[in-house]
Length: 257
Image 1 (cartoon, one colour):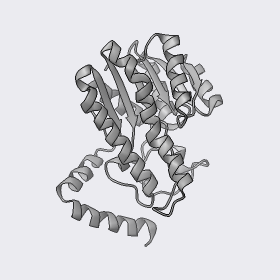
Image 2 (spheres, rainbow, N blue to C red):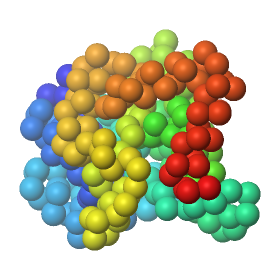
Image 3 (cartoon, rainbow, N blue to C red):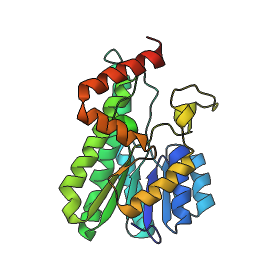
């Protein structure tokens, strides 16, 4: 997909990867809808790039339906819908509260489902459309210390695979963005000083946005800003038990277990 003159919706567009995507898409000549729960920051991005801001809580299906309706009312159609919003920060496993599990499932999984449910009928009628899902390398591998993040990112990847298989012959393209560390507040914290084993190899959001544009042009399902993720994924598939042993060693190193 070439982005010139395309209509793009980006959730989580006020910060981090989402903001970088909005700016990069605009430089490519796309009309951009900036969606975020933080309306003030989203409005700043939209004003900067000449786009449209729609305040959106992606955990609420009604908000995503309204987002799609406003984008279509403004631009006539949607060429690319980027389900980019996500949350982390939930440490632990089975002991994590039901409320915390539900919150992260709503944002990291159900938001992708709500978006597809809202936008796919319009795309299928046109016989074309593109869905970009920001997942994570955790969707291919795992996240040390956080079962909720790992589970929801695996689920998001599985849903994207299903969409690509089910609707690919109808003109619907799907890509999954699966980075490791990116220098955003999710990784670094609100003060930008967070400690994390992924920080040393982290990319700037703008670098990720450049890679996304190339991935969309090539219409690749997996967009991997960190090339080593493909190697790790291959090792996992080739010898799962060995990979699990390696992840246990990494866990012991990272968590000091």
